[in-house]
Image 1 (cartoon, rainbow, N blue to C red):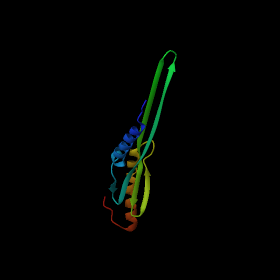
Image 2 (tube, rainbow, N blue to C red):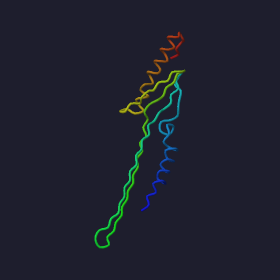
Image 3 (cartoon, rainbow, N blue to C red):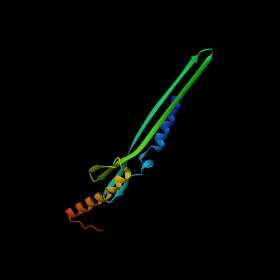
Image 4 (cartoon, rainbow, N blue to C red):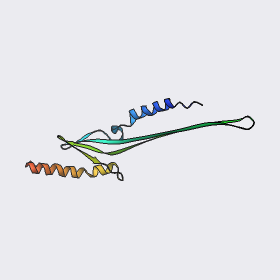
Length: 124
């Protein structure tokens, strides 16, 4: 019985290299006013296998094997930079990516607040 584990792992590794990237899952980095936002993802995977063979009574013989794999990819938030400052905005476990976009108005309020402190004109 030959399960080719090495071949399976190579295929999974190739898939992760080509598909399990932030750009594929949630998009590329973008700018929002003075802020640069970089999406962040979490990738998890698991593998399992088993096999066996047996002999029962008068020349009965059997073999069996199985294997399985699973992968999960989840957006978890954004790294947000402004100048030398870096923050992480969590996407939230219950709302996913939508929760990060709900924080966009807070980012805009921060921009307006900072400009008001500096005495800069804010164009609405």
